[in-house]
Every structure is written in structure tokens, then in C-alpha cells.
Length: 415
Image 1 (cartoon, rainbow, N blue to C red):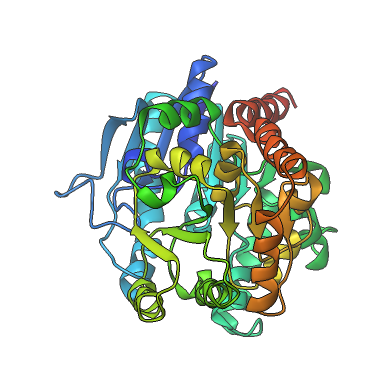
Image 2: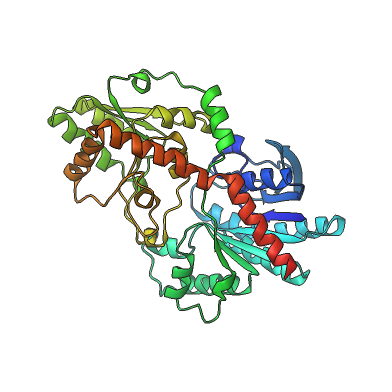
């Protein structure tokens, strides 16, 4: 098959962390398929733009995967410049795809949201050229705008975006949700009479276990706290922003100190706008919390494997009822240590496979109590959680996910 992957934010592993389509491309190519990734030249969350002249596109082999970077406007943050980037890129993406269409036509177009606009144009392109289009939903957009930015669902712009979302879902030849409750979402919107639920599939985010094991053995960090076998090490990896709600974790550390649990150490790997404020609190109160800054993705396997407990700490969101799909969850699984999450929901993998604890904590005292509970587990129960995590990671290996994706493509083309 000739497969086009069209995604605004398909960032190569060496430049960021949004690598789902990199792994799909890698393993589809190993299975003998031709894969081309179309993505923005402006690399999200960096100052990098892959195109510095007026060229429409730039082809480049990165991390052994073929990327076609399409020229797009620079931006920083989430202001007007990013909106202009999102509005401008779809038109240029269409022009680039049109050029490549004349060279080698795709058998299937696989596009991913968010960005609804790029997905919309990719779907239009496929319909115009009679190519089947698979639309992937990685974020319920604009629903997430309503939830996180507290915008009214009655806002005229939001209403237009909902109609665009509905049209995309209706016209797509196949729909893939990364969250397991995709069908629930469609039914709650009362769109199921217009959208055929038989064409809706679920492929979660995952982990490349082959790469994980390689990085675990090859890339280690020099961290005395992480290496200290005498202490119980609680590790958080990820952004340090308001949405991650790490103030609660600092409050937990304060309680642990007051209770004399000095052997429990919290180690935070990541960066963000809240780091400076939270780090100062920890220093002022002499808490056992250690901020290590951002590390390259290749070091994460070693870090999460050396932890005694890995944390998912996020702000409460009603979207969790459709299922969680955090990339770090699968890294934690592969690390083979218990996982604690402060945001349980429907389709909760931590509960389903007994990987640790997933609860809503009424306060920091309750949160601290659950950390202590895992720290004081007997060897048998602790080892069971570790083994469950390692075993469950096999279900979410990107090699397996790629087989599932290939089956969807083949079924679609056969029909």
C-alpha cells in the first residue's frame, strides 16, 4: 500500500515527543508499505522551523522515516500567531499533496486531529480524488476547549467547530479514537444516527518496547537520589504547568515530612511555567522533592525503571469519562513499577489490570496516605503490581498497534 499520513504535529522523535505516527510509519515500512508523512515545518513547542525560505515543502529522512515538511508560519504559545498557523497550513498542505498526487497516488490517506482544519482539508482532498480517508481523533476538539478554557458550548465559534467535527466524523471512511470511549462521545452528542458506529475503532497510544529496552540499556542518568536503594522513590515525568496540578504533590510532600516519612523521596523530571515557584516552596520548607528539569526521551526508560512508584498527576477533567491515553502511562507500564493516578475514569487501565492505584483524592492527606500504602506493601503484592505493569505493556506495543492499523486499512480497501 501507498499510505499518506497527514498530521499537523507529527514531530520526529529527535525533536519532540509526539511520536505516534513515527512508530506507525516505521513499522508499516518494515511490513513493506510505502509511507509518507505530511506535517508542519514549524515544530511545535520549539523555536525550530524546518523551512527558512519560500519553498512550499521540504523532504527529509529523519530517524529513518520519510517526512514532508510543509511550510507554515512561526508562532509561540497559544495566541493569535498559532491561530494564523492553523488557518494557513491546510491550504499549503493541499498544494503539497496535489504535487505528490501527480507523482504517486496514495491508496489511503490517514489524517489525525487535532487540528480539525488539516483533517478537514485532508478529508476533502481524499473525497475529491476518490481516495479512502481514515480520520484519527487524539483529542476531542473543540470539547477540550470548552472543558479546559471554560468556554460556553453556545459560543457561535464553538458551535461552528462542533458542526465541522460532526461533518468530519460523518464523512470519514473509518474513524480511530485513541480514547476507548469514542463511541460514547458520539452517542452523547446524539450523532449516532448520522455516524455509522460500525466504522469506529479504537487504537490507544502505546510504547515501542524494542526501542524502550534499547534505551534502558544504553542511556542512563547520573542521579544520586534515583540510585539510592535505601529510599522509596516516587517519580513524576512531564510538564510542570497549571494543568498538571503539581501544587498538590508539593502539599503531599509537606504531609509526608510532618509524618516522619523521610525515606519517601519525590523526584520530578520536566519543565514548565510552575517549576520556579514550586521549587522555591520545596527549598523553603526543606521538603524531599527534587526537580531535575527536562531530559531527552531516551533517558525516560531508565528513570521510570529505577523508580519505586510512578505518578500520573493531572488536573481533574470531565473528559476522563471517555478514557485516558497519556503517553507516559505506557512508559510507566514498560518500566515495570506500580503506577498511581489522581484521575480515575472510565476504561481505566490501572484499575483494569491492577497496575497500582487510581483514585480521586479528597485532599493531600488522602493522596499521601495512598503513596504510603504502596511504599509499605509486602513484597508479594508489590511484585504482583510490577509484573502486571510489565505484562500489560505488551498489549500496547506499537508493533501490535501497527498490525491493528494495517487490518483497518486492508478491510477498508477490500470493501
